[in-house]
Amino acid sequence: MTTPSPGTNFRQSELDKFAELANRWWDPEGPQKPLHALNPVRLDYVAARRPWRARRCWTSAAAAAC
Image (cartoon, rainbow, N blue to C red; front, side):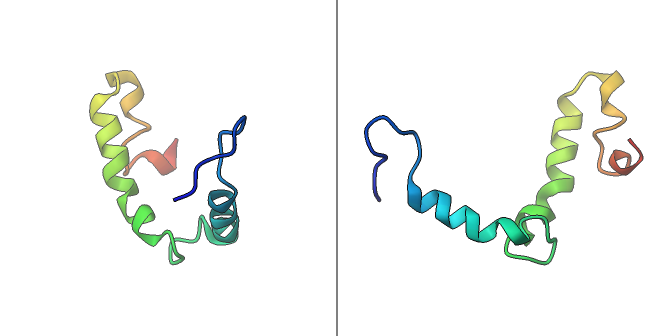
């Protein structure tokens, strides 16, 4: 693993890796498919911890309506 150069807070190799993924990042069948599969679970987790008034738009079932 390489460390960032002094005075920077990034690694060029990491930027390059994510630049390669950028074109297909939001493709639910692309390389990030496991992350897309977790979205309903993540939204439900956040909704369970949000105040009641905001919860309506955070549940996976209602998210599209908000």
